[in-house]
Image (tube, rainbow, N blue to C red; front, side, top):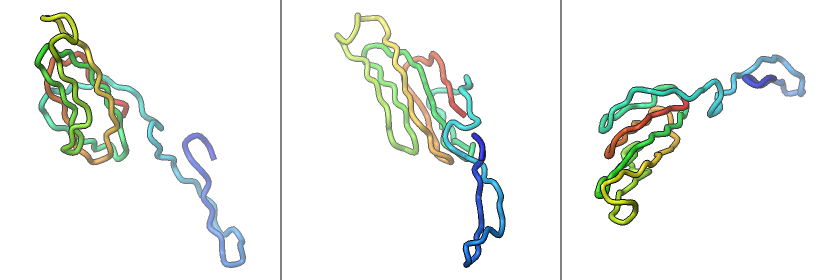
Length: 120
């Protein structure tokens, strides 16, 4: 075995090893790195990497604005700018962070995009 593969054995009815090979580890984070990606608010993207990825989306929101991260049609993260939560006419910076399963769509909307990073 190694950090990227594990041994795999086949045995017969007598418990004797009949073959040996290795299987790749396809764990979350393995051979993945953080990347700054070009994304637009309100656009749906699909994780087509074959394994889970993670997103970290930094947004600024003003009083009365709402920013939502939606994964597979479910709102999993939401920030709402509220009067009194910070000085009026200024912006709060929030970060949506979530894991996106393989073959699932995701989108973010609302506020002003500061950066969109993906562990892929």
